[in-house]
Image (cartoon, rainbow, N blue to C red; front, side, top):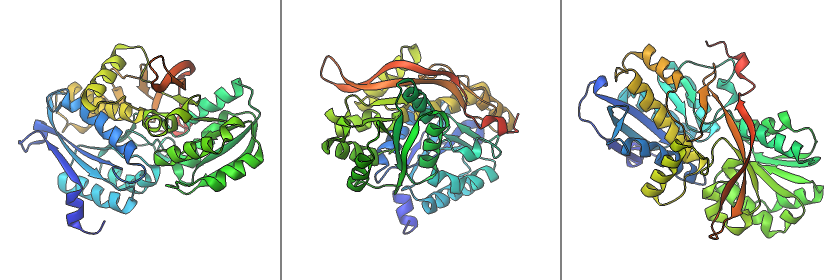
Length: 390
């Protein structure tokens, strides 16, 4: 960040209350990646989050919502400055929004040290799922290993014996591949880590093809995945080794950018736009009406982050200054999630179902995801047993 002016220029404030007292409004510091290769992720999380407040006349759980939105530029130094502002000057009630583990992990000590609640709408790092679990830290998405663990099981069921792995070299990438390896029983042909933000994969694809795996499991979020899929299919590699991925790399944002080459890719997720429950039907319809596009996993996760705050505000009768009561209400998570069943484990990470989707071309010619089965029911991450928080 070059200077204070640049920081202020990057801030959009949704000020929906004028009263100064804590009980008169809920203050949310929303910091996400809104520029660069990961911007589509941050935008979807933001749009899902704001949809809740917009649908309730600018309120969350009955209190007026003051939401300050900042672009972290996928830069830990920028994030540190924003966190200092949120915790020391703005004194927000909740911080949320971060996309990437390499941005979140450096700032978590400052957030939790200030006793400020952080609700993760995306990354679920191993660090805070085990011994470092904290009463102020909640994850509404998944633990970083979970969706990949589900795909490991899928590939076992499909009798794939030799799989090539590729992911970016940062905590989220490494933990994702660890999750896959935790459940997959076959042979790992190779395990390759690329630069975070890399967009050219010609060398990796050539090396991959030479290894002749049965299949490829990749995790490359945002623009990384878009470029990889385009280049992989263009090289004809999909004919030799089919692509499998967590849902993030085969979601509606990637489908929109890549198009036809996405058809046939299998992916695992905690949510899908075609899950048949009332909360999901409402969410998908409201999101499409507001933004003119199908929501992604990221949008659903942002939506539920806002729903969690709204439920806790509601269940404390708006008395969020009672920190113990607010934390208890957050842990209870009494809201209807579009994903269906959802509850927090003792480490404040989700216990939830995981599904298998396939990218298809439907009867109207639209390329989209279709849910084709359930992989896990009530799945809990493997680190919760090491959390001493009750």
